[in-house]
Image (cartoon, rainbow, N blue to C red; front, side, top):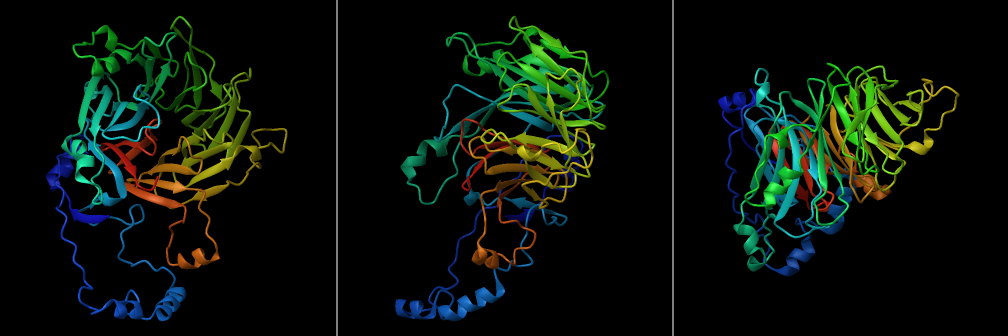
Length: 493
């Protein structure tokens, strides 16, 4: 990534205060010059001298001796710090799709809404439906909103080797962001969406959102009318349709960060966790009503930071906590205690992701910047006490490339070797766990310090917090953070 001058100091100050960031013009690309032009007079001289003017044997011997050294001046996002007055500019040649969009206030959580436009979409321009919750500045809580969004005309990056006529329609389109806002009186810490299929294909699926707020309340909204309004001209949203259809108050005044809808219960079953270590289950009945269990699941000694339902066992879920543990639960247990507990970090465990392709794989991310992959088949209790602190299995893989807290982790929906990770260093990294180096490759990469060979891609986004793979547009990611939203697809995935 190239460096370019940052925005003016007053713009930076405005951003810190929660104001919308100003647009920044991109630098124009310069002309490429061939520094070896006219160095050789004939093709025979080129082949005789080798690609850099030396015999091949001499050059290859030096490469074997030195390995693949990285210039000490190379800037690696997440491993190096920007100097004052600098920011990063993306290498556009590494993206198939790259768009950024602003929000009235920073949104620290978002979710993608499945749509009826088809699966496995590879055509452009792309369309993405999503939801997010804002984090308005202190003292301006009444400006908070739940945002229902349609992002359309998301064009593909121009490629030098593509014919002009193939991309003519795409080039003419500008990205469009349409929003429907629902007023909230508190900041949203986490938001998740759930769709309930209708009994007939004539009706669209019911789309529910659950927003866990700073106040401790969890608001459930039916945003189906808001999504319909995007594609049905003249549709208006009534005051009543902006009201929550149910509010979870079981957490009292305890702030929460964790919630998850079960993917295996169509009617809707929601888990919510708070800073006091309590986990509550809320179930939706066939008539559309909701019931929250009055008895919480309790075993954590710290704040519940993450909850994840199993993708193939409707009675099983996992939780992560600031106490450094990950626990596995069975909702049928009358004791409401964890069935299994593993100390996976000495710091807060912030996020989890359950692989949908290989359900015994679970990824975790912690406050110290480490993220790891666990094989749940190895989590077999060696003692009769499931809370025994001596039970400490080793992860299948762990990485400490990031030096700041992990804020999001998610498996690729169709490839259980690809994982995305967001961190407090303002980077989103993509990892290919299938990469294994043989002896020759290990020697060639000996000069790459602190960069694991499984690291596939680094995307920089200021104050990034959370990201998700789009389930219907292969390889496409939506991310959110302090600087707004990003929708992108790299050529690497």
